[in-house]
Image 1 (spheres, rainbow, N blue to C red):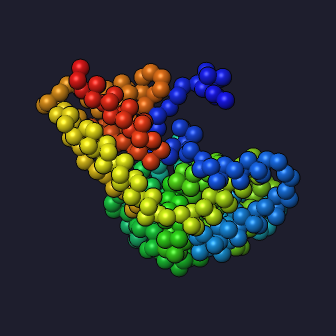
Image 2: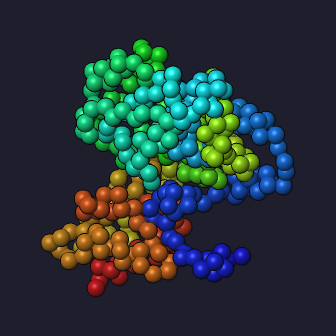
Image 3: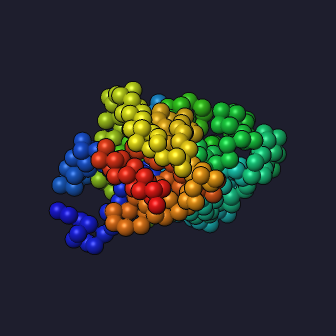
Length: 370
């Protein structure tokens, strides 16, 4: 079945990475088989979520877990859980937060937009998002000052390359500080599934990640944390979480992905990504208009990306022009252009085959030959 031909869709070569706007990840065959099998059956969803909770606990070192529609949904439901606890009357009252702690603190440098503003995901629960510090500085003293004001339901902490990477309170210190006030820390680690145990150990009450990024599963969010708080997250499905619920294929896919990861040879996986990076560097090394380098993942995940910087005094082709030229046509080639205003783009080869790498490199060479 050719879905592109059937529905008139543009074919995509993904040189950008695990991006929602490119529909997540290629689902691994083992995970796709489990998700597909789930479609043939009925389940008691509470039992299915309980099974997922056991697997999430085994995979992350947390007490429990549950599955949401996506990480963004997980943020909203986790914030809601921190306000309501296990009280169903409060769950049904949201988004009216009268009588509940409702202030949710977030470092200003973490107020990113990952498709929509993270502060909006907080506010969807009825909470008040309180930005602490300034873009490039948030001190422990400023965070303590806000915690001292009271009515704080949670602190949201974002682990992402999009955040400001300096002048901030890092997670272990933040978790310790929040614990002094009995306030839970929620970690948005959407693309940090390879660091789940590390983030749980750092003291976060809830850690959220995407099943459809490096776990290569169907679209879902994974919530890991203490049992009481996870139960409160799941309880939101009887309130504002109803439109954010995960279906059986999402839950089973997440379970299968975590089980696959448990026996995956991550050393071999990293070596394969390094091989692809080396292949790209070799294919483009003689393009004189380019400066090539390798960018390790900024969050410490075990892979790198190729950085392509157009040299202005050698050629007239900008990084913007390169991005646009490769994006034109069918298939479209989507480069990782997060830093295009700084004059460079990246090639993320994780979702690329060798044939696609050859095509992308040929297109880049042709662009600079004009």
